[in-house]
Image (cartoon, rainbow, N blue to C red; front, side, top):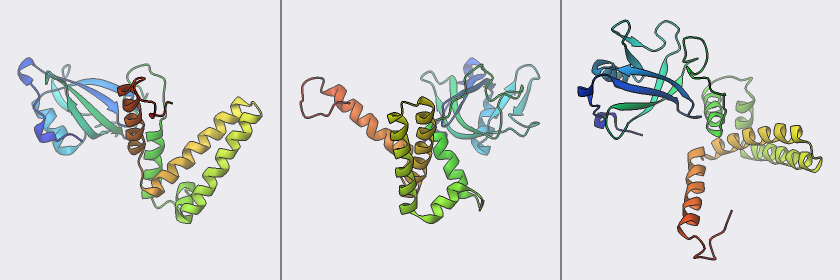
Amino acid sequence: MSNYADLKPDFSKGLLTVILQHYTNKEVRMVGYMNEEAFELTKQEKVAWFYSRSKERLWKKGESSGNVQYVKDMYLDCDQDALLILVDPAGPTCHTGTNSCFNLESSFTLKDIEATIRERAESSDDESYTNYLLSKGTDKIAKKFGEEAFEVVIGAKNKNKEEIANETADVLYHLGVLLHDSGVSVSDVESVLSARHNKQNNFKGERKDIQKW
């Protein structure tokens, strides 16, 4: 995570261009502009503030709709005149009611599954299936994961693409619960995959003991 105190935007060139991006699925949500005051408010309140060029005033994203954009992290570009903000949106980002101001296909990633499971675990919803599994412990979660994985195998044996897709979705969800229960994050898994990928690239054909994918 960035140290916000170390972020020093260059406002000598004018307003700071700002890109909002969803912190899990990396969907680009919108582009806006900040002056120095909007930037400082964003750092202090951990929600996105902007400067409206048309209305010539500060405005907090979601101030009227309630769809504020909670800041998870921020990064300046190499020239210090553009800012990338990773956000956890409270609702649609675009004023038209869509998630993004850009015409993008929606996506749902393993990090979205992870975030959803974490939110359920932090809630007190007794009707939540996630909380039911977590309350039963590792053995129950692992058993359900194994059962769903076997369903994928059956779908593959049946050459049924729809069944495979549906059962794989169940596998990924139950894997997410198992990872949460074990204290392992998706980022931990990504780090392992990245290390394996980099190791293979660094030893192109030179080592026989590096397992290929």
